[in-house]
Length: 215
Image (tube, rainbow, N blue to C red; front, top):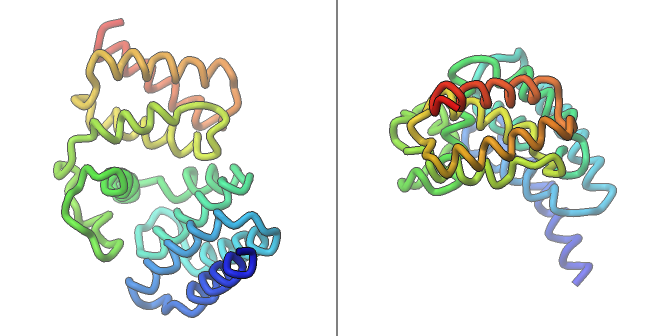
């Protein structure tokens, strides 16, 4: 029902706005609400996402540091990409994935979201507390390769996460994933529809594949 749909998203946005930004669980609620709200196609929700992301970025402060607010801004950047603003996600990659802690946090989140981390994580601090040795990376690698195509609104973060994963865990690559990644990366490079940073990272991935498997 349209009324129920509208009521759900109105309630979701209000809950996010009321969440305590000084509490870890409040930040978790905001992160999840921002992502779910992006599935509402209403123009008012799109405007809310843009305004909310600006506020979250201001609240987070300087770049290059992981805090629970980082996870909220990450979610907001993905939400903006979903509604057509790829530049917001590219900016997040360029400014908020600039040190080892944030790189590992991004990988840990992907691994958990895809089920490579079996233990439930109730707060977002697991992103920096969990050792990347806790997951293998094979399921993450397959998922990212399957989503490595230019029309994917999240393609730039897919590229960056693949680049970080290959650098961190080359052992996750087998002959099948190497062939699939080689083909997908080459195709995206040929189409030239991703950011310059993504193009450089795709080039680095292809170079690593040549070294690892002596292509």
